[in-house]
Image: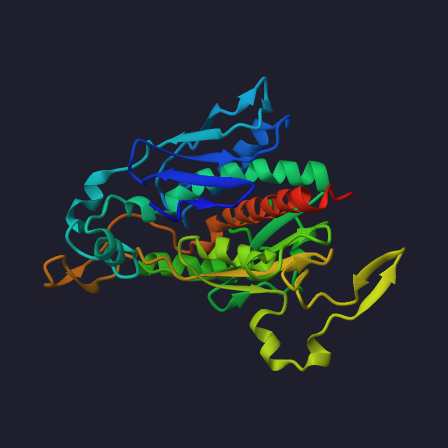
Length: 364
């Protein structure tokens, strides 16, 4: 169906369903001669994998990826790279009773309305399971960006419910999140969040969250005017993620409360480089990167799969009441962190290749 791909020069097309035999992606436009570190790619995929702790989906998947084409002796050939990930840890029986009812907050009703048919096993095509091959493709893009431009990308959970990390915007990019169960940079407030998640789990409920992402060492000049803006493509990519309801760059919605004087980023020169004194624009002006860190936030709604009783209707238009069984993510923002990073890498590499084709190579 249309809408399966992202990117122009670096294009990623995703295929598969939640409970199908496998899922995967085809990556086109990857430059030839790139030596990819498969272990680093697997590490990124492991970060997204379900079943790792009590607050995320208990679905058990090994999530081992395999590259079927586009590599020769460990290096990219410039031809399409085909990625496959086998599905093993699913149980279709859990979804049989949901075949004729529309789950609140899910895409059941809209998919059936549009196509006249829907795969109700785990949501089929609308499942967040499809983010796994995106992480693989993003890890490839990330290696190229790091090696050629020194770009570093780090996302983290900035807020869950009303509990927000007590850090300045972008500050967590210099901190280690290895010790956090929920990719949260504030150890003191993490205790509060864990208590909240435990309570919600006992209640069979869920909560939303915000993921903040900081991209460092992005060169000035990436992005295109009007309909090819870097921030526009980042927003479009993030809004394509499951459960995403909001995107903001730099000051974001806070800018409506500021005057022009308060919101503008004034320029200065540091060691011969033109930089901005502040970074309220989030590293992008006029849709083009200005060389400052790119900082954006993505808002995720509460996971709609909850074990509380909910009112709905079935495919025959009859009123029904359902109670979804199984262990699901209490907050989808937690596992979304590596996916946000992956999509940012895909968009940035796509824009870098587009820029290189039109304007030449960017020097570090």
